[in-house]
Length: 401
Image: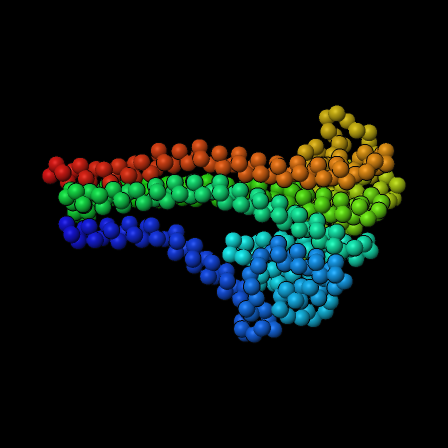
């Protein structure tokens, strides 16, 4: 009996400590990945992890003080660049060295891409870089709010799954403490081995099921099929570009070029950057507003329609209308009044950014609510039978025997 208690106690301790061990190992691995190999100060060793937001703020402050963005990133990263060009790879290296433990490599990569795009936009339009960088800073703060909400929404389902995963072992331990000897039944009798095998099978199915549900929740509020991850930063950069006095076609083309590929990365087909470039260049060539955004929608999807198709009049059935509700259509709606009537587009762009932020947060909350409901299925169909077969049946049989 005492040996059974020790075995089950060790099993419970291992089950309870496994999530903590995995979390610590993940953090250690991530720190090792971003830590300089030679340990020298010239390569960024010993730099405080102030966070990505603090790095962006420091770069903006240095730029407002008369310094260059490249010099500021060199100071933040603790090493000099081979050239003055601000690329995604260089900025990503700096951000990884300075990010905090709750920030991920994907956060650093995403923000580095946006910061490099902000520098390209400033060079393309000849405008102040600080306004473009501030657009990236605001977008990153919105992104962090969504990440924090997802983490909080994820906490309760994750705790529930941990409890369910440890419940059979805890029940066996309690049975041993009460003198029922369920371990002897499970390992020493054919019926017990059958219960253990069936319960283990249900347990494995339940864990796989819950992992799949959690993976689906992790994708909530992420990139959409039409590149919604670029929608927020595209709106913010358009607001910054139009605020400098750039005409709409020029601003669309410049933002599309900036968000597209730089010199250090290949150009992906389709997406919001391609749609913005198509709309800006079509308007510059004299296309109507409707024609430009029909072509932009198709370019965003990765196909370019024939110009004759774009010249067809709008139809109610959507035959040549841009698909409503997509990110590229939202951008077109924000700029339509400014193009047709000369109104300022900044107000509509700010409202669109706020709406996009609210929609992303609402999508996370709705996904968390759906996850809580869907967890009832593996609980009742998998974990409950496993709990009965491994925990309840051995205890009852042992008491009877």
